[in-house]
Image (tube, rainbow, N blue to C red; front, top):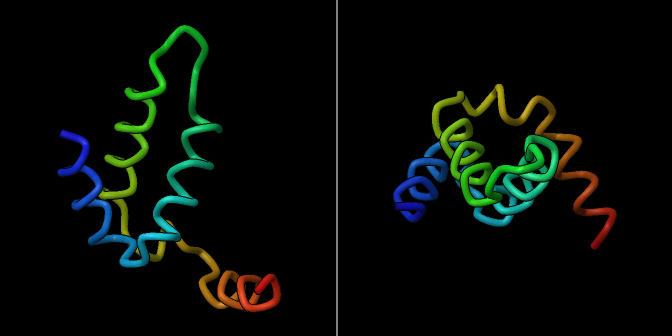
Length: 71
C-alpha cells in the first residue's frame, strides 16, 4: 500500500512538507510516457525510503534559507 511507502519514506525525510515537494518533483522527472503515474510515484517513494538522508538532501542549510526568504 502507498501509506506504507510514505511511512517508510518519512524515516528518511522527517518533514512531511519536504517529502511531498520532493516526491512530486521526482515523480515529474522520472515519469515515462505510457506508464501509470501511480507506479512512478510508488517507485519514487521506494527510492526515498531506501536512500540515506544525506543523499536526499545534499544542502539542507540552503534549502531552509530559501524557504525563509520565500515566506
